Image: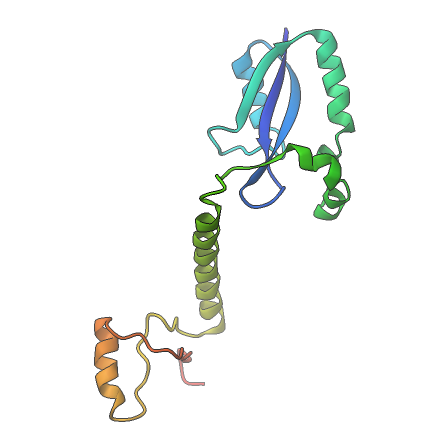
Length: 168
């Protein structure tokens, strides 16, 4: 049996960030050690590059490493509050997954998509139509031209109207 030190990306430290956690495993080969670590709690399971580094170590280093892991507050936090109490010890190993140049674009796209999804879910739950898909109701004769433009997609009204699906 050989001993391995595996550094993997761990989650629960914020959107688009990861914690570089060190795991010490006893396995027959490196591939098996990486598979064991990938299936551990808090490791980002679904990412292809979740395993950052894998190296073979001695038995003495393995014993010291397991003691380090047991003392690490990141692996003992059961909620966000506890993790926040030990943030000073954790922060040195937290890295961004996105380049600084692309971070603003990523946040805008991600948050806007999340906003639209939440809005659609709320409209459906409350019994309202999604106002971006339904035309507004004209109240005056001048609005009929606007309605025709709106139906063709050339006109977007400034005010949003929420209409009930059924009378009531």
